Image (cartoon, rainbow, N blue to C red):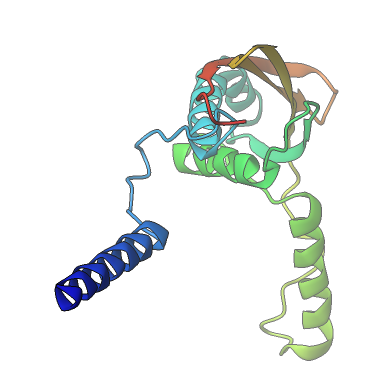
Length: 203
């Protein structure tokens, strides 16, 4: 009887240990890029991608491109300037800016030029080439393509909360400005509202 009791106890201990190991194991599932994922209700990569796609699509269907082509005969050159997060929530602006750049380049309607930190890095590399690269391979100075327009913008957030229910509101404002005369040629706005219901045992 004692042996049987010990055997049952040992089996139960092994079963419990197995359950604990399975419960503590990390599980990873690959998901499709286009499949929306909202775990926390905060701004995420899906929001960044969808907002950039919609706003760039709207920007490129407006009349400023045709006006520029008619005046110059060329595609407009666009640079992305500062996009500021004015809300309370941390938002990865680098990802959002990259999404905008990708949409601009892939659309084929404009010429995209590097700006900001990347432009400085390129100039540093060009300066190094003057000293260390073969003269026939060194990139020359004074050949940069100047941008015709600069895209700037802001992201604002508002949160309304009652108990465990929360509404998160995001407003993205982008504006395209002519560098020739500071006129605004396009202004776009995109709003996102998320209704978030917290679980009973989740803070």
